[in-house]
Image (tube, rainbow, N blue to C red; front, side, top):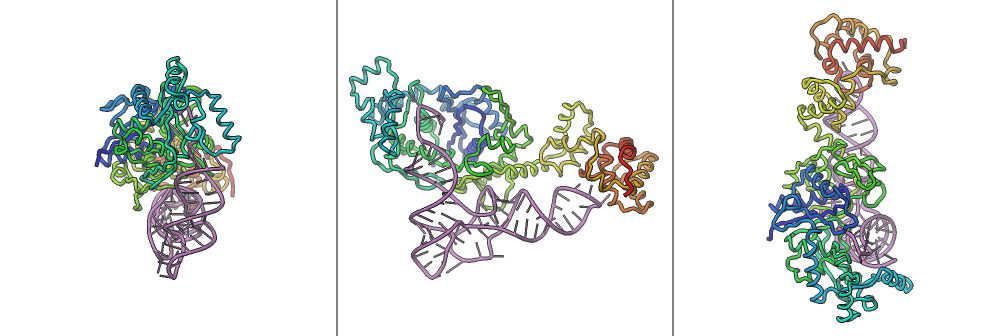
Length: 511
RNA sequence: GGUCCGUUCGUCUAGGGGUUAGGACACCAGAUUUUCAUUCUGGUAACACGGGUUCGAUUCCCGUACGGACUACCA
């Protein structure tokens, strides 16, 4: 079996879409599993749509996600260059080959002439393709004009494109690794432009030429390419490369969470989740889109989530590291139907991976946030906070967002807790507890607990009845990590102050 | 419109001629937790429809419906 060589071939027209990340991932998994090569090829044949920074963004995104490139623009490789704009001469050369073998022809039709053809077909009620075996004889091209006239036009610098001459009434069958045999008749195909009038190739030509030259073994790409796959097969045949044709695998699409249709940036914005791996600022509009990274998603969580959108191992294991995915992956187990994008599941994965992180790593993150907020905190304290918080958060930023009370006394108190639990008994216990605390020297979570137990026993009031009140007096909230640990972390003096403040300011209900 | 592709719980999916149609997320309930969350236990919930083939079809075949992709000198 020939070496596995796969490529991810994005176009640098903007940020990398999350669906693109999944495509890259599947390619990568196959390459790694088979001991093959992962190639990043930049498909920048459309000069009008080129966006500065997009290429760098794509590479940064893949790197963040843990998808490593073996050959590419940055890495180099035996088949360089990996940027299609730098391979222009190659496409011209291969287009010439097709021209001389009679598989392609020059076309000189203007936009208006093409438009006129379209009108004629519309009037005739035809369902056929625009420029095809049925209509090419009526147009201005090297087939109808003859060699002499064609040469004259070429020499005079007339604009032209090179079109592929689709064979007449032929059945094209291709085997897709995911969908099985797909067949289509060439009467349904049109004479696609291979070389544009600016001298650049179209996707179809460049893609086939490069995949051949780069010895690509598997073309794994989105389902949106399935309709043009027969054209690509025809191209391989025309070049005489049929035996070296890569195997195709067209991936099911990522669908919007509600309703139907391809997942778009619009949907993501509307539903409030990222669509790009990293934050992206569109240089044209100036619009900024928050990425998965900046939203607190861990790369391992995103990868695990993405891997399961369209693929599954056939076992009941859900948690997979990249290495495990590499082991378990197989194209055969990729599904055929589109997968709706469920951000809740991504959050669950994130929560899982976040919990698995050592406290020290989370503490480093928290400390960085605190620095930005100009809040002092020792490493020991950060460690304790992370340990206390980690079981109840899904994103690292929640360490700070849900843990502000560790650093500042509450200014407001949860109304529903106050109305339900802030009563005479609670005030009694809190007062006694606060007074007892004042008297002591040593203080930690265990002491806080035993002290509170003593107080409640003495006053003969159940601990459950006053816990919420105590919590709200210290954190302002109705929920949070272990209260005794919170008191230990903020310290005795702060605990006493906060209880005192609450007793002084909150209404003295007598319920 | 045409071509191609698809259709199992709300979502991701397993399964496959005879199953109590399995798991996960979400949701709901109970337990535990002195509170919230965690954790644990349990629960609700699916084979798009119609014809075949067959002793038997969710599974195979054909239609229908629905959905999607494509239909550029964009990728």
